[in-house]
Length: 198
Image (cartoon, rainbow, N blue to C red; front, side):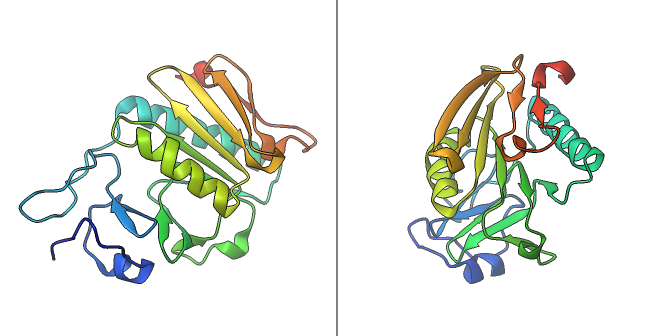
């Protein structure tokens, strides 16, 4: 079925469609994941997705490992998930963050995380850069995500948005010890230094 670019979709309509693996619904609009944000002019369907780069995958792997290891060692109740995993914010927004952490098991229904996770990490790629900085930044803040990281592999930097503390923005390099704000009051806070394992 051709997908009109200008039409707005509900979550119910979106979930009934046969789409590439990592599409997202943002404000009722369908966006493909890692592939360029283009549509096949013959069908108006999103272009098939290419796999994330190896650098993207390395960063994702190391973050996932560091967070999972921290939660296990500290017997934490939060869980970490990696893409593709659906976060249903409401009836017009279903996203697949590269990584998210939830400390609310009641929001998990076996298929979706319903509502805002506590912490979201997006790893930039050329095709998702504008969406991660503009659409998703505003979306995550408005839905109550506590902490949002944008990891920029090209410039080896991490931009941290701490929404719970009046929308504080911090800039770090991969060589810095980056504090994780959702764990800053834990007996053993979590810091991540990406350069150590890349």
